[in-house]
Amino acid sequence: MSDIHLRSALAIAAAIANGETSAREVVTATLKRIDALNPKLGAFTDVTPERALAKADAVDSARAKGEALGPLAGAPFSVKNLFDVKGLPTRAGSKINRTRAPAAVDATLVEKLEAAGAILVGALNMGEYAYDFTGENAHDGPSRNPHDLKHMTGGSSGGSGAAVAGGLTQIALGSDTNGSIRVPSSLCGIFGLKPTYGRLSRGRSFPFVASFDHLGPFARSVADLAASYDAMQGPDAHDPGQAARPFEPTFASLDSGLAGLRIARLGGYFARGGEPDAFEAADRVARALGATKTVELPETERARAAAYLITMVEGGALHADRLRERAEDFDPDTRDRLIAGAMLPGGWVVKAQKLRGWYRAAAAELFRDVDILIAPATPCRAPLIGQKTFRLDGQEMLVRPNMGIFTQPISFIGLPVCAVPVWTEGVKLPIGVQVIGPPWREDLVLRVARALERDGVVSAPIGACA
Image (cartoon, rainbow, N blue to C red; front, top):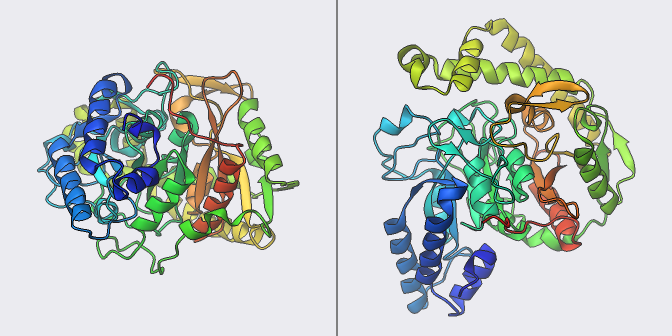
């Protein structure tokens, strides 16, 4: 199979199950592609060939014996390097963490994907300690956008975006505190799912802001996204913050269509503060879905400010000892924001959390009348690597904190979102749109994303530079 990188995870699993290819052949081809392309994409920080080939041989042996194979059997995946991977130090994008002892056990979501037959091939580059929207790492170098190597992937899950958009793996896992799945999805032109807060286990992953942290998948098809998400559901004692929800599958209902769904465009805050491309993409998706209604989520600007405050304070508290003992080993951009957060009054956090409760109730009121909300994912297409500022609504703004202006308010209240990639003819770089649902309705956001994909409104081709 010379086209393994073009196939979806589910197509690879089917090809292995019917004997068209073997898991070893898939993994060998994947490792060869990583070896050839990673030097220019900067997606992987660690590759695990021995582990991957051993797992591939186990899949092939199971098939030869007639044993049942998992739904993702033989499909390669990779994980942001804040997930524990047995035998590797969990870097979390930092210089400091790489001297830690190697992880003794895999992260829970790694275990779950491997239980479904998927094969881990390595760990991915990321913004330091996940406090980043650019995909530029001061210690490991930047991840580069597979559609134009001069441009950012977005972050902090930049390596995840590069790996999937570059065809290095079919599935990647990332984290999303304030937008770190949706921003790379938007800039790299792939699908990304931020589940409801508390839905998927964060067990044995390196935290950033415990009250906002989500983990979730990236893929180049909605079916792969749903299949990987379903495989990762389930309780885990290693994450006390995980909600006690039953398994609620999404894959079976993917092609249920749009009938009966009430879909609206988010206006107000979500219709300003970005470049025209961002709003045109959201308009195109809304039109395709027949969404003629526009609604507003009140006080979103204050909600984003409150989310930013909580992020700074929780992040600063988490890293207080490292800041005291090894401040010189941080990326200065990360360090300075963490120090500022550590100095903010705790009383401000109390007020921010009160606003959070109010804002969550306001969103719940909106969802009494609609099932899905549409909004831009990023304020613009991918900036250049090294670009520090951009102009939005006539104002010069910093890139690093402001790529998440449309994602951060949604993370603040933990709603499920699927980022979908939109393309403009003649433009090399994509831009994403958020498909937002009420709590625990990942099935709805994936169903809408699948309808858009089926109708050709959104798609995720492999980058031309990969």
